[in-house]
Length: 532
Image 1 (cartoon, helix red, strand yellow):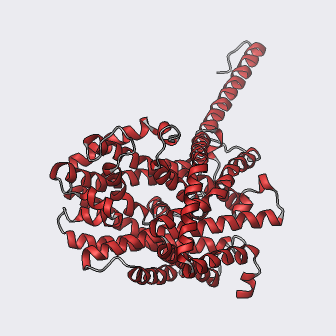
Image 2 (cartoon, one colour):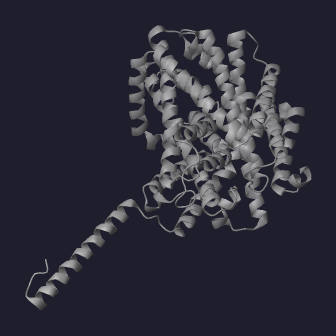
């Protein structure tokens, strides 16, 4: 089986590139870190506008498609229905799409913006800064990120379940790029490398936060040695889960993960300033909606500054790097749903959960700093990984909740990583729906290795660079996916809607009445009597 796997060009090329990066980062960490820093600044400085425009175009296209006449087409046969219950479906989307990122940034982002606002005319640690912080956090975790996952998954789902083709990105782009092997292999290799880098970023962030949590709970040091132990634990856990398949380990862990997240959410909502959470959430939602276009296209060419590059552009690039994996996984678990149901579900429900999470956790932290002067924002500014644990110190059962939060981060990482190994193995074995164990092990090892190297070589900045650079070529492919969707749907017969059926039945009944009336009038004309 191993020999068969390595005959796949995408597997051999992409694995070789990732392995080369691992070796360079391990044996020349200083040079690796310097190159990462240079690439980070070049990418954000020269291509930031491209990321912003691409995401905005994708959102407009998907919303238009959802309300169009094509919205009733199913990802599968016309009579097919979804494989998973709504709760399980949302749990899988939530766990795969957010990973530990939301747990990491749910407190860290609002408090970072509160401490250093995104606008120069707003003073840090003020009430205005708190309001802007919540609105911007909602924006970053809203529909923009999920539009990227939705467009990728949509094309894959249409081809995989409606056309009975494989779920590769190259196959999704066939309507635009053709079927040349060299082009297909290049596209799939880009997709694999972007996925590995995006996943490594998430694993790295989660490991940093778990290290910070262990420091808060058990007094351990924030060191690379501790992080290596955490990587090993996560690797064993997600490989065990991945080997059991989609319907066992991944499904059960996704449900457990969502259940744990709900418990945490309810606890903070009840133990925190409940009314403030609800009011700040409502206000932030209004700010998010009213500022959506300006935030989506906001850059700083006249005044300079790096805030947009460090936050919005990083988030978009991170989402784009994740999109081959998350899109393929979202398509895999959305079989049987209509395009309209798929787009609305994927683009709006997970972001809604994320906004509620940020309102509860970030809102509570803001309340304590504004009303109790607890200094959470300052502590977060000094160490991002301490954000969640700084908050728990202000709430009841702080030790228990801090320990349980480490478990939550672990389950988030495992559910994301086991899904990623499944999809990466599929992508490098011709789009197999049941990829071999050996392929899962290879990608499981390489993901953990590159995450460790990035942490060793440059920490957070190296993690951000990995996503940004890997996402740049894939952004072009995302825009081509729009053209691929248009070409695919133009050839699809439109589904018969219930309203059309009812209209047809009413018309048919009217015709029958006219025929009966015409028959009676003819009979009366012949006999002089009404047949009634």
